[in-house]
Amino acid sequence: MTLSIPAPTGPYPVGVTDLHRVDPSRVDPWDTSRRRELMVQIWYPADMATGVPVDPWMPHGGRQAQHTYLTSLGVSEHWELAPSHSYRDQPARTDGGRFPVLLNSPGMGDTTGWSTAQTEDLASHGYIVVALNHTHEAFAVEFPDGRVENTVVPLDSPQEVLRDLLLPTRVADTRFVLDRLAAPTTRDGRVLPARLAESMDLSRVGMFGHSLGGSTTIQALHDDSRISAGVNLDGPVLGSVAVEGTDRPLLLLASESSPWYGQPGWEPYWTANTGLKLPLRVSGTEQMSFCDQQVALVVEFWVLAHFP
Image 1: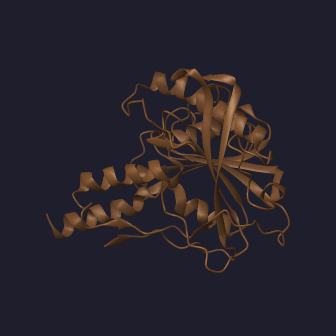
Image 2: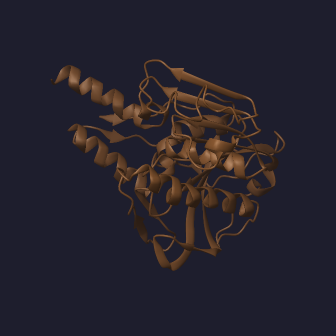
């Protein structure tokens, strides 16, 4: 049997591509023999090409993570992942003009593929979504030379590690990718799909993220004036922004059982914040309801109901 994600609801076909970037100004904090190296996944409004197959739902690392999760539910022998709804490396559309850019940072340990339902739907409505794999923290990241870098960060790391190491690294990743986004050539010589670089409107940049990716979004919003608005999907408010606030619009969505709701940075404990802030709690949700793992959660409930 097959697990599928919802189809995009917008009028545009969706293209997807990968971007390989190396930051020559930074040493990787988890591998000091290398410069900081990133793989980025981009979803965008595309021209449709007849006969082009759709991409897998998850990149290499994401498929491994999803398989591990399904195995923990005892259903991996019976369920497989359907493909995504995105077409690999298709030319970008230009008849809609230039499109706003949305940066995306996944949750701790997650790869970019864990938010495919969100990113595909946004792209189908006329956004270019640029999602970052945070190397050595994401479950597994595969580079063009076939090398796979696995996570070295325990999921139960104390909050001090999240705040003082992971968060600054993630924000630096975000700002570096935004710096280099319009450059058409990657380090391995690949170029972006036709018209994609020209279709990005870098005067209209937003950001969203899940869990620690939401924390990254808020701090990046504070640190980088190019990011105009942000959405935090059930993440804690960490870093200097927790004290200093931000002057730009911010939506905070908390799950029903969120441990963050009511803490500093969430209402009413953020008196330094001067921008529009909308904190909401979504009833009937769990923390992983804000990413593709929601599909697997539905499977888990079904399994428990039918095979208690």
